[in-house]
Length: 366
Image (cartoon, rainbow, N blue to C red; front, side, top):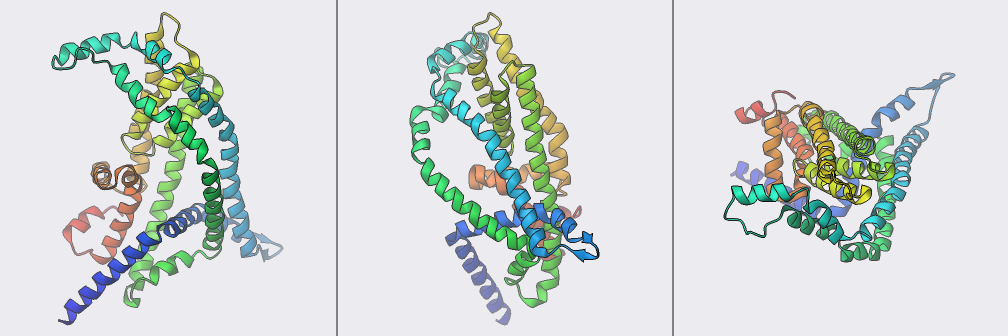
């Protein structure tokens, strides 16, 4: 009966913690973002803390402030670089003639439409690939969407500014006192498990730091490859090429479906930018599609095996199944958080359920 009471108390405690995490979701998100930023800034903080000038070390406050300023500088530098380019993209999209764009892609896709109708006789005779593509594309860039975006921009900027301040404030203390977040987590566990939790947190820090740094590097490389390919091979204007490369790089973070969405958007907007009034319009479309496809293949066979597998020490098939499960439960958001959440669960499973054979198999590489 005593064990049953402990189990009931443990379950009740977990339910209460889960409810509080849901109820104070915004605050929890701020804390988690700050924790991730502190992980990224940890190497620089340690480097500055080890510097000695005439036998004196740099004060912790100054080290933490310098690290935070550098992180914010990178963020705002990137923001101010990309903001004008995004503005050009929004202006171009808002003034696009969808019927004209539809006509441009209908001729090169005529053979594909005929092939689909011959292969699948049950399809509607009026079936057209370009009609489906344009319908989905218009949902993303229709006038009402753009209008609502600008109508809510003031609220967004206000909430974003508050978020930046709150995250920066929390991040400063997480960087300065690197055990603060760990102590917050340790407070949720009984003292007898303190050693296990500390060891688990150390493993989680190392794995997630490598994962997030890898994801950032992957996004940069995807942006670079697509941007340069669109500019030098596709003939897209430089600013537009960089923006479309960045869109593809960011969407690439969404496993499996993100690269295809980014590629479709990139091809359509590239076509609108360069125009397709030449007889070789079909070859131009094929070239644009190949740029995104080849970059995606480089990502699949070169970047992702290192980032998704080696960084979190898991088998690629294991990662694939986890992402599918997370997607079915939480959609795109679930897919985004699948790998970090699975990493946390694996590490804690190794510490507290190491006698289970399944846990041993899943954590043997950690």
